[in-house]
Amino acid sequence: MLPYITITFIPIITFCLEWSKEIKNSHKRFTMMFLAICYILFSALRWECGTDWEQFYGLFYSFNDVPFTEVFNHRYNWTTDSSTGGKIYEPGYALMNWLFVNTTGSFNAMLIFYTTIIIFIYYKLSWLYASKYPIYLFTFFITADFFYWRAGFASAICFFSIQYIISRKFLKFLLCCLVATSMHNSAILFLPFYFVLNRKFSNGLLISSFLFCSFIGSTSILYGIVEYVANILSTFRSEFGLISKLVLYLYTNSDNSIAKLIMSIFKYGIFIVIFCLYKKYFKIESERSDATKNNTDYFKFNKSDIYNVMLTSYVIGSCIWLLFRSQLTIFARMAIYFTGSFPVLNVMVLSILPSNKRKIFFGFVILNVFYIAFAKFLTFEELLIPYKTVFN
Image (cartoon, rainbow, N blue to C red):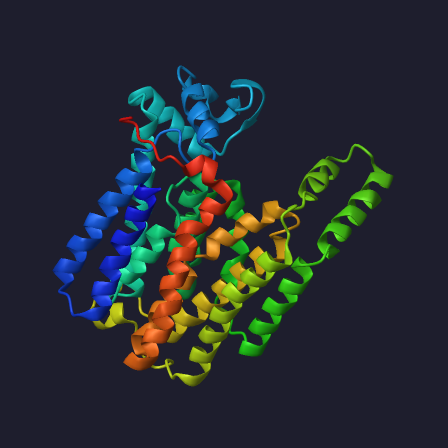
């Protein structure tokens, strides 16, 4: 447990220092690079630790001696450690495994490679969206997960592509989505949001949508709808391929207590209200982003553009999680593509609040960091503890 406490407290201390005193940009960059190295080593040098370790470790070595012509057709069944009845993985992820197993033979070498890319993406975005408080934003990005897998790779690329939604550069956005999809198929579902995130919705609609999804997610309505559709389809063609997928998606979470539901609604709802109040009572339409003012931005947009996209993104992510958290849980994973909006929003709020009000909101932020950092232990304790490295 001590390694996780340490790796969480170090970035928290650094962003508290950033808020308490002025720090030169050169010192900020040095601090962020130090944090980046810490998290790359912590995440990439682990051993038999983290969710899906067994699956991806076995998949990596299954590509050993596979000819290049078979890379994209290679199957792997992690339960039997064989190709019999196995699945074909995404082409980008398959190619990366094949390249590293046949050049380095080291699973950790591949982890270092793509963890570094993820951390570098978050480093760049921290300066892009919060050049005044980049350590704070960077801290939130990297503490959102202790260990990165291919879904984390895909979500980082998709969040990187949001800048192209703001600047309305569809081809660059499309390219990012395709790269992300080559790592995880679910990333293709992020593509339609190009036409949604830039739209301006009223605060009433955003809050109402959140409450509606919270209510639907606490009932068995979705379960009933999918079950009803599956039954209708089976009457026309019993072997229809969609039936098996629909039945799979009917999985429900047995731990669906009222207490956990209320905590989830409170956690997301209170911030949605705060972010909507900020949008209503503070004039940000004519202000340029800090990055633009400092000539570090490579496209022009004002703070209201950033804020509008991030607020819509945060509400959508919250709705997805509460809608599917206890039923059709496979869809709840889509929420990870929107989680990066939260730190961008609260750094914008904190940067303009008076110091006496900032302390109150800052308290919520720190509590949320702890929630993000340690909530995983409630579900995945046996997969995270004890922390082991390749040197053990």
